[in-house]
Length: 154
Image 1 (cartoon, rainbow, N blue to C red):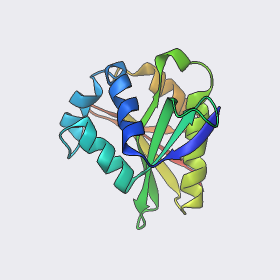
Image 2: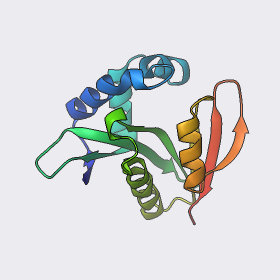
Image 3: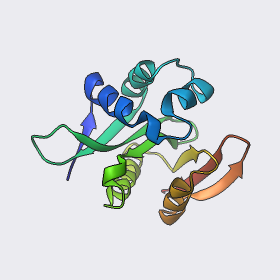
């Protein structure tokens, strides 16, 4: 597998449209509930302008994405990074891609001078809860719509 930073809107948009119903609630619905954008296309624009997005594909010449992670490293006061999305295609689940993506995000956050990383997921997303705990994220709080985690990296 090869990882790379996504800079092209069409590649990221195609991936998110393809996996939008793998999220519960679906990605477009979740975006409308918790984000300041109104569509997946606007969300892609936001990610590509304000975050760094990393993807995994099959090989050097393939741009068929199997998974992505986005990370914001712009909180220079609190030195907290934030992961707004981590996604691996269902057919690639269990192959270590989420681990590789999380490690890429952690390395990038450290290189960017961050001291911690925050992430949240929705209640009922047991796969994500187990994954974040496995990689050292500590649950910090819950509310009706989210479970919050944080990880010290420095």
